[in-house]
Length: 157
Image (cartoon, rainbow, N blue to C red; front, top):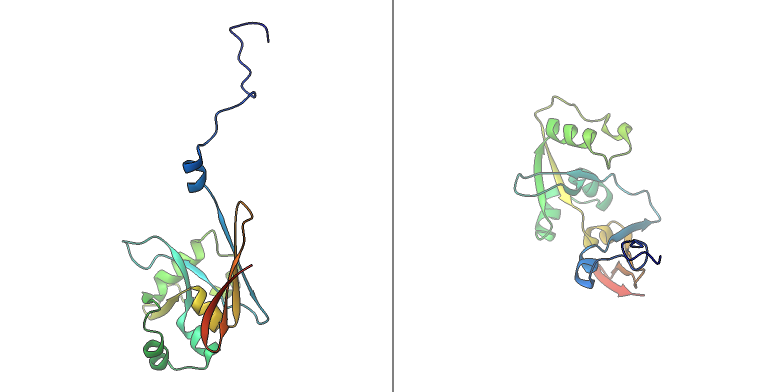
């Protein structure tokens, strides 16, 4: 320590400034429900966008007991995308985030049929009877989305 050429790299190492630290914060999101959650797929539906989380519209319609026409007119602000079943199967089976291969058994890897997907959101989760709890890497207050009278209400705790 007395040698002027020596440097203790553990004594006050440089770290990210606050702006960089803010960008590196992680957000953890948890979904809770008293019913089984619908399968969620991390799929890229357009070249201009990266992979995002989607539910099969048919699963959503079954859970909500709605027709496709009623859903699309009532929730036109929710993004619905169409993808070929073969492409859906390829992406879902290769996804590192997908952990239940049994759920893909109903899909045909060579099918040219089209599947409708709806992007996941706090509003959709609330309509399906779930609540979303978010927690960032600094353990700050969480935000939850719940349904009150058919509308999404966000609460901080």
